[in-house]
Each structure stands twice: as C-alpha cells, then as structure tokens.
Length: 318
Image (cartoon, rainbow, N blue to C red; front, side, top):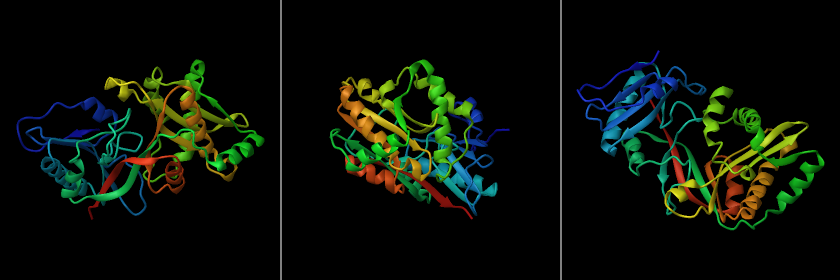
C-alpha cells in the first residue's frame, strides 16, 4: 500500500500519483508551497550488506535551499522506518532515472540523458549528503581510431563461434528478450542492483522501437544464445534543437561474465564506431559509465574524452 504524506500546508503541487504507485514508492512528500518534492522507498529497495537502505527519488525543487529542506524531511522519515543510509536521487532502483548531473561541461544534453538544474548537487550537499558513486559520459570524435586488441579479440571470438549481428526489426520483441537475458546476468553483481521482471523491462524499451536504427543495436551470440549486446541510438536531442543529427549515443553495453567472452565489449564498441561512420554520423557518446568500472573507463579513455560527470549521493542515517 502506498502512503501519501505531505508537510503541513494548504497547497499541494500536482503530481503523477499513478506513477508513484506503479513504482512502489512508500511515500510522496511535498513542501506546501510547491517548491520541492520527492518520493521515498524503504520496503522494496536494493540490498546492501550491513545496511537498511532508504531511497529518495522523484526529486524536484525550485532552489537548492528548498531542495535541502525536503531532503532533510525525507531523512527524518527514513530514520523513522529504520533505514540506516539514504541514497538519492534514484527513482526506486537503477533501472529507472537516478544520479545528479554534477559537471555539465560544454556539450548540450543528449537524447535519453538525465538532466537537472546545476544546483541540485548543492541541495544534496547542503542536506549532508556526499558522493557514493560517480559516473561519466565520454565523447568520441575520431571514429577511425582502432585498438589493436580488438582485432585479436575478434579473431579469437569468431574462431570460438561468437557472431555479432544487428537487431532484427521483424523479431524486435524476441531480440529484446535476448537483451534482457544478457542484462540480468551481466548486471547482477553491479552495486545497488535490483532484479527487474522481464515484463517491466519490455515496457521500458518497447517505446523506443520506432526510434532505433537497427544497425546501431548489436547482439552477440554463441551456441545459439545471446552473450552480449550494445544498445545505441541516434541523438534525437540534436534534431529537437533544429540541428542535423551527427551523434550516436551508446547507451548500454553488457557481456555475459566469464573469460570465454573477454574482449567482446571492445569488439562491440569498435563495431558500433564502424557502423556509425557507415551511416554518415560523425560522433559517438559513451554514455553514463560507472567510474569504478576500470575496463569501461579505459576503453572510453582510449577512444574519447570525458564530456560530462554525474554522481549518486548518500548519507548515513544511523
């Protein structure tokens, strides 16, 4: 059961209560003047050893001061429910929107990128939070650059029977189910991982069916089953700004664990760069990478440069 609790006052801002309920939030709180709000989770949250996590999401505020005020209230509510650490902003889990944009850089926002006012970071810091995890997006402008390791890895993988193809629009849902299968196995060990039912995964990605270019969604297979994928999509944000689309956003890269598929991520990235050039695009963004993932960071560092940084915040409650 979802409980809606509001701070004292008369005016309550409009909010999508159906979404709050669907995403299993335990509570939604608003400042009475409509200047800040957030949702809280303590029942269905990621598991962390030796902690009882409380999650703060659906965060919105008109200023750092108002944001800090609603965050302070959120911490009190999470303490009351026995939480020992607060994490945010995260809309319940990492399958949904999470992180604060912490260093904007000079590039405009790209398609599917979480954006926020620059002072969100100050709101969390003012409320006593500090970075728990950091992320970055890198821009690749030289798509002709090649890593010698990719050729060796490709030869080894092909000799072992690994193949790479583009997603098939005629069997889009079946290929999406294969992507889900790889995601579940690849992401299980990720920090703050929460299982996601296949139906919810499909519901999240099916709306992009008409937006994708099949050549930019790569699926690796071995012994009749999926073992890796790279999901990329044109940067439609450029078109929304009235500009020609010249950029491709590499959104998600996943490979089944195990030495057998070592180097497959690099092979998929280089294939994406090749496909991007062939389609007439000139840039690729490696989006939203966890900075503690050394292999991914080195891969993006070889091909491009960091253009944006993000952070997930936490605060000890007990």
